[in-house]
Length: 217
Image 1 (tube, rainbow, N blue to C red):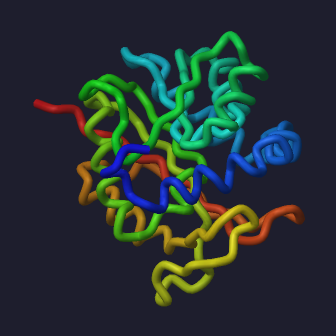
Image 2 (image 1 turned 90 degrees about the vertical axis):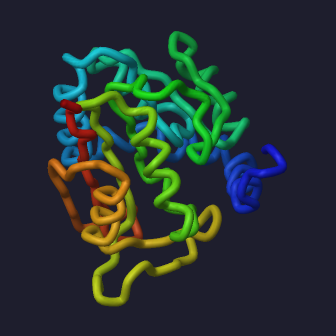
């Protein structure tokens, strides 16, 4: 972490470092059990595959979604805040590139990515910091590039963003339309939204927002 990095980043990184091996084992086959999530990942891959530029899995954890997108034919790499997660990802998927980094300041040029995946990787971010991260994702997306954002959804949209006790460290549930509005303010356009009920192993409703950076004229 740099001195200017938000203080919560060190807390989140340390929390995931401490559970990295258990987390990797627990979620190694999670996509095999989630057909709706796989379907949206397939749609995302179809949208970005024809575009120039790589895809970044931001908050990649142990790399299982990165590997899934690679098998879908994408040029994809992973970035995660936790050094231990990156160590596991490199060990598990040595053919892929993984880097320690933060979504608050991506070490990427402007307009370089055809797509970005943030699969439940923003849930620990304080709400006030979400707009800056969405602006950073917009910066690195090429015109026409897509963002697929997964998050925990609230059952009561009128209640706003809701903090809850995540198993690893503190996290937040979002009304889908609220997060969609912030994405719009960052310059992204909603393409699709999926909200699904939790499975037996999950603790809350899951949501996916697919958004696009408009082509520039």
